Image (cartoon, rainbow, N blue to C red; front, top):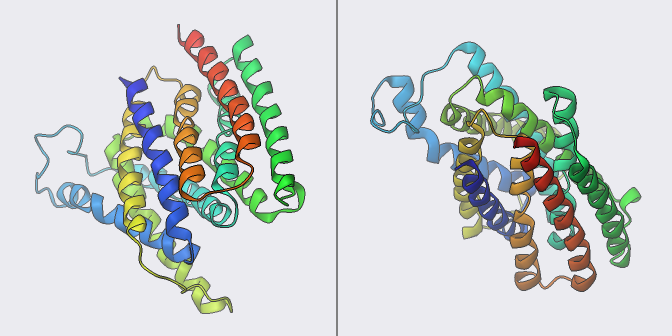
Length: 304
């Protein structure tokens, strides 16, 4: 069941990235992200209100009937909000200023970091398939670097590429932390409260930035894709956390499956945004996928 939930989450993430790219066209990154986390918190507000006020609106639904949670639980969830928001901030800026057909394959390699972290933290050991997957994924990054050069994007000197790398690091950290979190707290408690904390954090961040920065951050026009991003965020995260609640699941395999979203994102970038150098990037993407498949096979064998 967790495998199916992971694939559903992956498909929705692909659609979400396309909607994000559309939402960011001509708009402030900070305002788009603020609205995204606001709508996410709004969608999940009934779950939190019911739990906190003891209203019992979802008492017959084991998924939505969440406990109130201890102070420790809120602290763990707040930390997740910080990690995820840092990843999203970095990724939103990179996505705005880089081609989506480049950002998606690069970001799709972050399960390498998750896998290496799983080795150190959870004692997971690599087999031959997983090592092969890592090597192929690293090679795909070399190819993507060359594709970037063909579009005038030099990885070492491009700040948006560096932000994309930072986003990948925080994404890997979030994935590893989620495995710990699912052992401690109900998965819907995590999702509902960390979206609320994200909104509070983002509201403070935008307020401070607007007060002390000389940059203009209020260039904005409404587009339906902004709301679509939030809906897709909530649903994809629900399936992801639902998959992780299985105590036998390997976080490295879930991360790999979710990165198959790159297929949807790449196709959307090619059809909707008419980006360049698609043939070379498609070849690079093939190596990304081969690396993911090898990691998946290795993880599956590890489970068996």
